Image: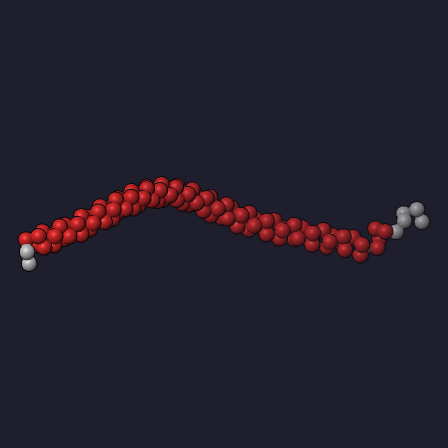
Length: 113
């Protein structure tokens, strides 16, 4: 191989290396853009997570309030059942009085006869 051929070979290899370096630079630039996009996505996710934490805290408060409300409703239902039983007992007592009153025929006879 002559010196000219050797130089041509070296020049060809250098040209290939320059092309490879150009490709690597383009790849690095693409990776930088991808990393910047990922950083933006992560920042957005952090914001979303913070919002979700706030929402969950609000939901926990709502659940606590609902539990208290349900306990109060159960208590009121129990009180209403008790009142219902008392009213029913009173209605039965009044019916017994009315039945006794209607059974007493002396009370229903006219006094002018």
